Length: 215
Image (tube, rainbow, N blue to C red; front, top):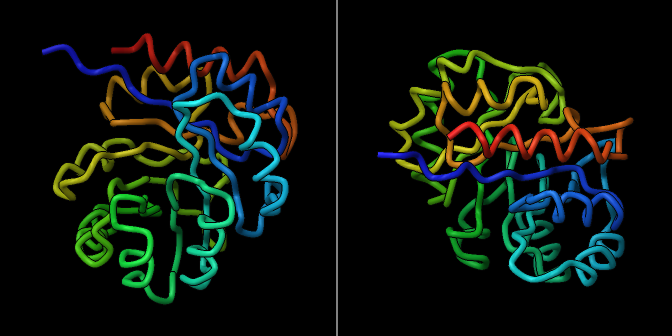
């Protein structure tokens, strides 16, 4: 059976120009970072960008080690569709009850197979809609530009959730990554940047083209 075309999320959007370039190139989702990062945006900036987007584009707020109520308030104020959670969130049950479990993507940093096994408990706790697998870099929750062993990602089927592959993906390696892991979606930020917080239009177009041609 032919694999369904992989979805693509362009993360770390900070301005409307990058957002519209990504959409026009075929991005399925856009990510807005509210955690500490060179790509961090304010609620006001996110709202301004979101109101200018065309319909049918999924939008995701990215959070790390932040209070559950802050996550809930941000989604309520912005109208973002999903919350992507990294690190420790103080009360996942609050997010599940107030937003609904189907609006949660759980970010997991992968260093060894035990990280995949440990994630099964987290998935059961938060009832997330999908799991995002990222590279484990000490002290950083994401946006590292580092890859991890994709062989570990192939074992993530035990989580029983759609898998979003992240971590060091670029236009040069995304086709290989999709062929090996066969994820539901791929996520990129640093791999399509001109510099932190600003995307390179040509890299965005090449990344999406290479990701979607690999099925």
